[in-house]
Image 1 (cartoon, helix red, strand yellow):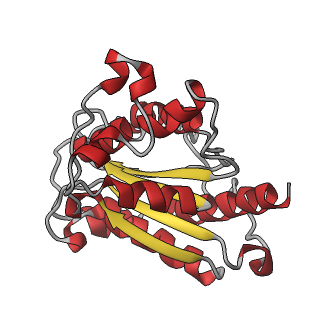
Image 2 (cartoon, helix red, strand yellow):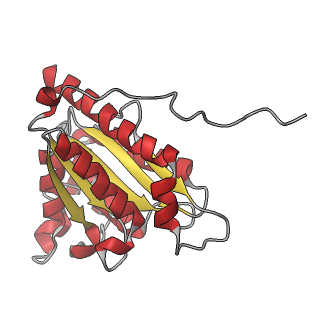
Image 3 (cartoon, one colour):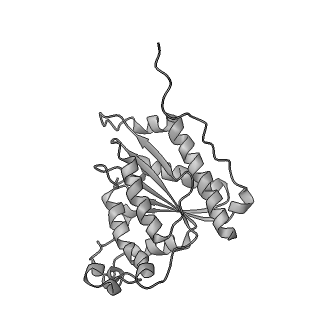
Length: 235
């Protein structure tokens, strides 16, 4: 007898599109954590751009930040010495004139929806994403130490691409952090793709585009995050 069909059913979990008028003017920020030198070499960034195009079709304003293009110093651990010294603006922003992390801070504080894209690196998110997260600790500490909630009624989603099955591990780490920051997580919050074990990346983009589950997740993530962002705006 043939084995019973198992696994995820395609087309069952469909998030309907929101009303375009409700979405018009929402600000969507895409942050790419890929270290690839050219934008078109990064699969996670190409999917991120697809998501921004979809958001744009709903009348949203979109912006893309490539962490690779910015001069960002590492967190110097001021919190470990004295939590009251982990302040905003960040000590490193004040200390290093050429530090460009303030561009990221400003964009995050201004946006309604944040979509973070990362490749999988040894079962984890990229080093660029980790550096950004550690520098964002000063925003989280504004609430936990100073009682100032800087992030409210904002939505976060993820794009995770790789050749090892670390999607849930990466998503768990990142969503844990963004929840502490104050972001809300929509019903469908992750677009992902995992390649074969041989780790041959030369045909990845062709396979990603042909994968109906990845494409379904992308549309559902956009629709779901827009629904939540519109609801939060109405509160």
